Image (tube, rainbow, N blue to C red; front, side, top):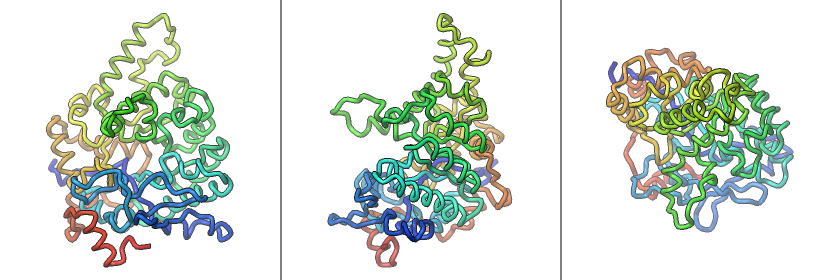
Length: 423
């Protein structure tokens, strides 16, 4: 196999939702209550819903195409962003330029757990907008290019019955996964161990969907020093995935739902071999805890492999220990448009790490597309013939895509002159 022969499916990317996203999906009587984008006095574009401005700035980590010196969490305007962040047509062109066949996109304005709607006062209106969000994400963003996106949805966390109903509703639309909090108790919600979420988890199993738990919402589980820099959160985020795994594995969740599939989105893989060593030793050594029946005669690491998808962007150490992790549960990610993304050289980056770890052709295929497509039960070649799904074939379609980095001011000047990002 050569680099251009790889097939890349990314199960962790993000979209910066366009301001007109609710236009076609909110009933007329609710239209004036839909979230709107407002440019404030500082020139920052903000989503405003029920009188509250979004706590998620637009420029927060959506820095793809900017020079590294300008990266940060500072807010910005749509016109400062590379159009592929919010324009699905430009996104697909950027995917082609990066040799990526398909992508699963997590929310930005709504939050991984529908935070914008969950924290609003008027829950009747919030539910209408949450459903409109899902309709836009599935019926408009994903449907614009069949075969290029794996549909992902959100649920109303404030009402478990509504969460079940929404899970079943969007499953009928072809949604493959629910985005949810990795550690819900940190945000003041019941934990996975409490049993509160069991009806939703049952619905996910019944509908053959995946629970996708993205890093970033569980930072509160770390009692960091008040003097700690932002580096703590960025570096330690993947370690929270171990806490999530522990909640699910040693709590009752995976025993109650043997068919539940959970993706540890952007959780990395390097921590997993140590975690396996620790939990298996604990299980076999701490016999006084009488956990023999809990795992059905299996080791905890074996149960982990039956339920979890371990997702990474770059992880050379983890790849060296891929046999300890399990070759059937490792999945590659791109993370467009955030600072961790390897765009537009994801194939080169992934290839170097995979080759450096001595991966075989069979192992490369498993990591870059087979494992994720099997896990999400999604056919990558339904709309794209396999020979046209490779890095080389896709990049051949994107020879005119300019991947040059520009400063945010240059993007703003160029985009606004062309009417791009001006709403």
